[in-house]
Image 1 (cartoon, rainbow, N blue to C red):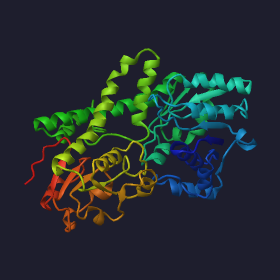
Image 2: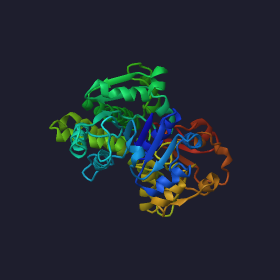
Image 3: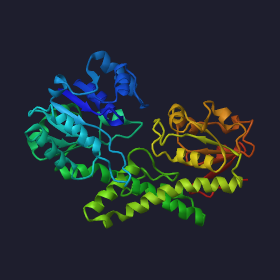
Length: 437
């Protein structure tokens, strides 16, 4: 099929490459000329495992091209995917202006036979407004479906090509036919397709993210109780996760969630519920958000307890991205902790396997060190902020030069405590009362 993908940020670029990998002819449209030039040159604008290799292949095969605006070629596409961002607005609602702007530009060249498919995460009700807007511009009512994405940074390409479900919302079953053809390889391999109305499809993504955020904050609330009572929240999570009604995924204590989806999506969901007059139904999400943010403060409190006066003390932050296998720094708990410690006078040194270049562009005053040994040397305190596999595999005995106090705060509960203690380290972990010599 001939496909256009509008918006080549994290979602759009990954989706475009995935569709080209399935053999479709893809035209990626991105008004940012710098990003477009990068992709034309075969350079992925962000780190995502496997994406660079996949882009190389589809470019070599001639299945994908990139441009800054629509033309006759893109207008003739069978399917137009809208993949632009919906960032958090000042009032914490979802800013849908990019979605409406992209749809308006598309409506100027849209053909009646083409299908418009929204993939952006939007508040419930946006799809029907888009139909009205596009109809006023094009002179006909467009065929529009909503097909939410469920990508996880770090496994986004795999999630695109082998999703655990495909959700399609529409006004008319016939409008979904082209999308079923597009996704035929996935459907043939057994991926279930859930067909719903437009409003339900819009709710699926934000409600899924709200549930996952709630699960993370639940176990972190239990960690607060464990810290106060002497219990072990890691063992607690293991025990309750064995109940198949609960499950172990997302039950990990630590410094909480971040990134470009969960935080903004739950806040936008709360704002939309308020607009619909049912704000009280999502009051619990305000607590979910608050619990999550408290975990960041907890690390700062622990650092202060250990070092007393933070001024001039060297604190090494291992990991800056919001999650491993990503260079995304949006709402990163580790980054916020590093910045706040620096504001309190600490000499913060950041290490990360791939995110240091991105860090330089947004926090140029934070010191960075590419060599982990140099980063840890002479540190008064080490904090593990992102659970990169590099850090899980560290051999603590190798760091003989320092830290002077040999103290590490495991913000993700991934270190082998016995191994680190045997090497002479004091280990502090969120939600656990670890006995140190």
